[in-house]
Length: 182
Image 1 (cartoon, helix red, strand yellow):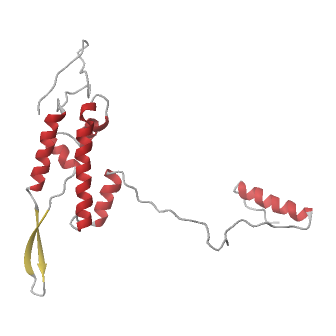
Image 2 (image 1 turned 60 degrees about the vertical axis):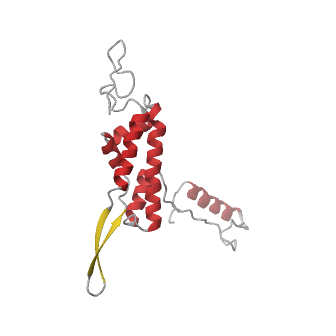
Image 3 (image 1 turned 30 degrees about the vertical axis):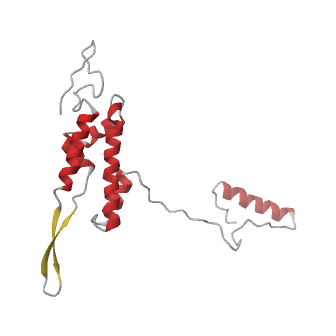
């Protein structure tokens, strides 16, 4: 991880964080460290001890160590917020695709492990995808009724007095007012 000290005529750093030198000077250099992170995670499975059967026989199984954005940032010697700078901030444009591809690989693994039932708790996977991968959890409700029971209806009144009363109720409903209790 090389440092870059390019400064302008005022002594300021030319790109990136104005108070600190960039950790990486080229996307290729960063890509090597990113690949090293994925290789390290792939070669260090988590060992889980379980007990099965009526005799509680101890069994160990290896589970793929999940990729995380925080782990990637740590491997790169960055904070999570610095990693975001390399992905989105002006002055870091050469790194945008590198970080985006790495994050896509992380999300892809989360989804694959979740589908395979290896990703741990379903709630945590859902939390990660919603909060860190811009997925959404929303429901859409169709309020239309198939039997037309909720369709607008026409009301015919036989006097001006009744029509005026209905109009007051309609206007009050539009203004979110309650009818007066007389």
